[in-house]
Image (cartoon, rainbow, N blue to C red; front, side, top):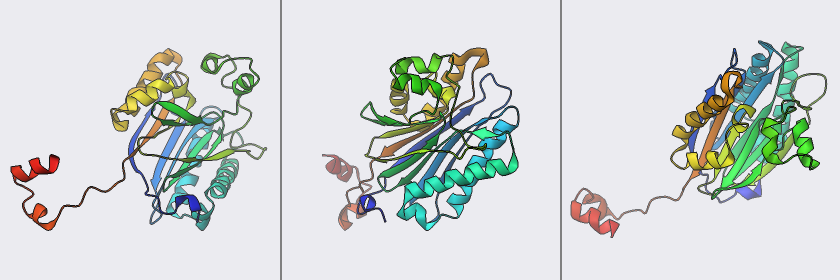
Length: 275
């Protein structure tokens, strides 16, 4: 077992999800969030399909189905070496797409939450953000032409969303080339916000908006932000999908004595407990 997870409480997760078709003919984004049986963990992922009409949606759906298989039949590796397990899942997704289509392609961002640790993997330009106290601690790096331009200092990060080459990816699932995912690990504290989003969201919604909106509740914020993204995208808005996970306090409530529990309905006792 990973020593980082020993003796630390697992956060409780406030969740919000939303997916908008935007101005496109069909929804080619797919997402999944799976509680693992007897694993005390959560597997979340988002896939953005590519490859033209039907093939794009097929590719993304295959990605989610492969994750569902792992969630329903988790391997020992997921517990003992999560990053190796996510790499294997990525290759399984890639192989499954190729078995069913020559043209289907998909991005993927996957997050496995175990204890107070998060393990992530990404291919393409669907992103994971990690925020704490209003600051971005990390975001996944896009496998795109504009990310390379930013890395070389040719453009600022704020210009990525509107650059003409924004949708040119050099890594994806499906095709002849075996994917080379990025992977990483994060430590989570109460109040942290994790956001998985397709490019249809991050192109039009700022990091500040992600953080601020989630403070009033992840469940309400996700559909609000996805709708905002498609509205800002106009008639040609891309599919917009967003998963928000906000870590809540896991400390148990103060245990009351037997006589407090016996008299717990009285107004005087309730007032004394608050004082």
